[in-house]
Amino acid sequence: MRLPWFRVHIVILNDPGRLISSHLMHSAQISGWAGSMLLYEILIIDKTDTVFNPIWRQGCYAMPMATRLGAVSSAYGWNLGISQVDSAWSYESVIVSHIVLSGLLVLSSQWHWSYADLDIFISSSSGNLVLDLNRIFGIHLSLSSILCFAYGIAHLSGASGPGIWTSDAYGLLGSVRGLKPSYALTGLVFSSYGVITANHLVAGAFGFIVSIWHIAARPQPSLYSVLAMGNLEVVLASSISAVFFIGFIVSSSMWYASVTTPIELLGPSRYQWDNAYFALDIGSRLNTTNNIVVGSTWDQIPDKLVLYDYIGCNPAKGGIFRSGPMNKGDGVVQNWIGHPYFELGTLALTVRRMPAFFETFPVLMIDQGGTLRSDIPFRRAESLYSIEQCKVTVFFAGGVLNGSETNTPAVVKAYARKAQFGETFSFDKKGVSGDGVFRTSARGWYTFTHVSLSSLFFFGHLWHASRSLFRDLWTGVTVESMYETEYGRNEKLGDSTSKSSRVL
Image (tube, rainbow, N blue to C red):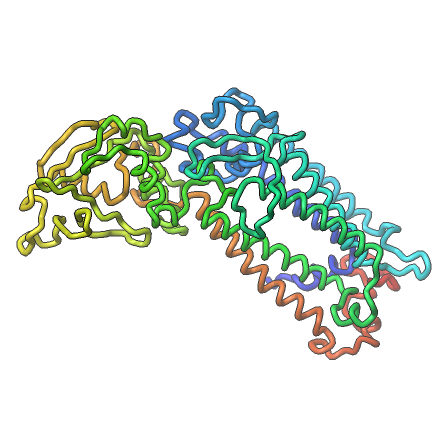
């Protein structure tokens, strides 16, 4: 069966009341999805270990977003491991508010669909259906600017709202707090938390001033004609351009990580693994003398930091097309085994870590100068550097095996393979159905979906803009005769009776 997509869209394009109704219904679906998804997540989440089994390893999608804006606790008394919670919003109140809003939007959509012929759409002089699109744009811009400014000065600053989630550079001390606006805006780069508040204040104030100009000023006839400002499809094309632009921005900030996408809520980014971001910080915290590490210092390393320095927390490792949460692939973390140190006589060896885009990687042990000293060969008969031949020893600092040491080749090789993945952990796979393959976090899925949708919107923008700007070419109809010939202009399709003489 062929879908009458063109006819359906023409009905909405030439019917402002039902165009509003469609927008309201889409907003209702988004709000209802957000509330329902958050409800699903708080019902299935395992809250027993917020350090080794955080929400981002369990595949939570809506909860990190709600937490980022200030909802950090449940009405049933649990939170995300934060000692002091000042936010009045709970996950349950967020759920109720979104579902109630969704219901109200559905009712509003039904009302506008039933009562589509409002007097505000009809010219008092000619009786025709008219829309002042430039003034409508100004009104929408003023409302959104007021909301943007109010969000910055009230919610973000903490004046009458909780603020947003903030943390340190390594995602260890996160909490919700109000943010004072910084005095220097750095463009699109969110280099500090204060820039977020300042951005909303400046954008809201500037947008409101521009909106007043758009409401009061009228474009000259030539500009109005060249840009097809009287065509509702131009409005669609312009709106899509704003959406895909923001979509690409948030996808970039999510994938590359920024202060707007906290590590504690969405997990590390791929580039933090590639640059040994957490490993370098761990090394800077340790007391080392002649490559001898005092084991007790590892006990002082935060468990969160140890978990971050594990390849399974890399959203690019598993591939974005593998479904399921991260803990479905390798299981739920039970214990940190400890940090393995390998020695060859008096030489300290380091296992070469697996790069992000590899599924398998040879086990290579190098010294501080980068010289290969030992490995696990593919053909031991032709090897000179096997662990058996070199007699490599491993000992552990920190974790459950703190202080233990062994030179048994099979055991050394087992921990050498684990050392490729960063810090070593023991996992529980009994409660999680998985196939042992690394997965991606919500950070990876968010980036993939928003890039895909933004790309679709980008081509949609080109399509609708070209249809609007070059309408006289692809229809073969001149502007002078457009009123008499444009399909759907003089008849409201879908109604039981035609209503002529009502035109856009």
